[in-house]
Amino acid sequence: MDCDVGAKKEIIMNKEVFKDLDQLSRALAEWITSLIEETLTRKERFSFVLSGGNTPKKLNALLSSTPYKERIDWKKIHIFWGDERAVSFEDDRNNARMAFDTLLNKVDIPRNQIHIMDTSLSPEQVALQYAKLLQEYFGTTALPVQTFDLVLLGMGDDGHTLSLFPGQPIIQEEKLWTGSLFLKAQDMYRITLTKNIVNHSNHIVFLVSGKEKAHALHEVLEGERNPDKYPSQVIVPTQGELHFFMDEAATAEL
Image (cartoon, rainbow, N blue to C red; front, side, top):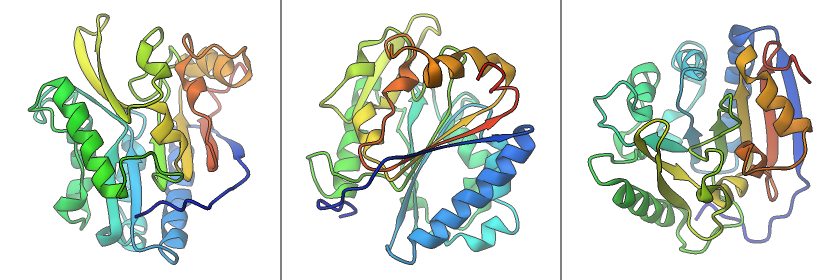
């Protein structure tokens, strides 16, 4: 089990701003690599939840390149996803497909340590199967005090994160670890982790880039609490660290 029932930590929130996505990605690649190195001096494995979308592509390219590729002990890394689009793995919109193309095919990680959301199933079945997979990984059907070592999150220009979109009931889900939903605006089903399993992680990092994110980022960090409108506000660690890695464009309204 990777959970420590007796652990209590003061919540740490850190905000870092970089000139552009290139500088941000380089700094985050170093930060992640150092975290993995340090964690693996104390633990036998490291659980890493990846984010989809375009923003992490430069980060993934760095992690799969020298020197980071060599510094990370990939045989001890377990890869998960925060959310997925209900499209086939062959579809360019598939988050797992993007991660394989930009990172996982380029490093020496055992295939059985890459835990994709199997979109060949129905959305509801995907969510149920992923919850079962997570319960087996953590060795419990009760929510552990500590879940993932690192969760990488993005933020949409509407303030969503994972597949927690404004106005969706799943934002406030308390019991289930995973869920599925239909987004009418995208005419698409999506599968997602829910807030609690993410909030019990040791380290949560928001990667936010671009001027189109500026208003949402301002509302999430400095606006009134309204997670039904700005779902990223539900990400509040119970005992871990919360980090925002942002570029200057995204912070224009802070």
